[in-house]
Length: 447
Image (cartoon, rainbow, N blue to C red; front, side, top):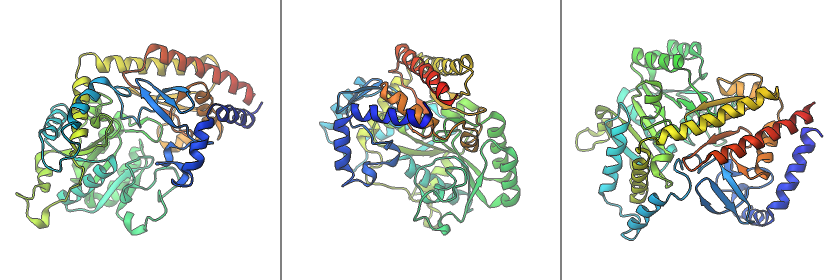
């Protein structure tokens, strides 16, 4: 049985298990483009519909239960429905959900984040990572007086026009409706390629306001920057007077309390946050040293030098208290040691399966992030994620095989896992078992 036939069989099994989800999806298609609220949540032939989530598991409308390795796009490092976070949120919402005035919860969360993250002295909150990246870029331009922004191929920084380019190899504009003028000052460099970033600085030098990077590229499939590369990017920014922006929407408070700056021992000028700092509620933030952030201060900065930031729900008290409570739990001794140990154990076991069965499996891994690549070699950037893949259909087959066996992660085209403290040894044992089963099945299909 070839991969195409196996995939067809898996689709049929999935359909049989998700009749009610299919009915909901058919209705959703008439009201929601593509039948979903965000295209990344779609997978063939249709997504299942969740009714409940607790710990490391989600349950759908048909009663199927899945071990979840997507964890709310990586936001739920504590797991679904953490009791302590829910308790604090319930206490708060009896007093109101959105006051539209200042309150102490934003200050408390700000102090908590600044306490742990190197290089930052002040912070502002937004409602999403996309917004936070947009404001970070504007702030960098205001501070430097320059226009050009450098981003790396494969980097995902949300839907902001000027960063929504080169997300995939060979794709310049990431969306229709993006005029060329919107990205006229965006420059692309190749991730983990020192020659590429040196060439960019040699050509544009002191016109560059900032370099923005995910220290570990998430959507590309958990691709960590090498230490040599990230050190050189920092050095080039210093030489040319450009700011280095770390997009830590994924890595912030996931790699550790100090995020990627602590992980790599490299200072960033501006840090962008999201996901985990909201404790399961909408959030984003951007932060820097005082002299940069005070360009947002209307009481100190003349109008021609000010950088604007605002938003109706910026600093929403529900997100603030949920984020504060989450970080309090992350501060407990042993939290990251356990989570990173568990994730590392799974990563090693997956690599061992590939070695034992003589099958091309390459695992990229950092902290509690894991990328699974069926490639000829371990990828160092998104070009290699796709160019070295052994078969164009294999990731979709893998996604569907695990799904019908009660394991879910995204995306179906590029498998990456984001574990939580609610995952157990039993969870990863089951994942490793089904992974080995999958490899044996696919090996026969490809032979």
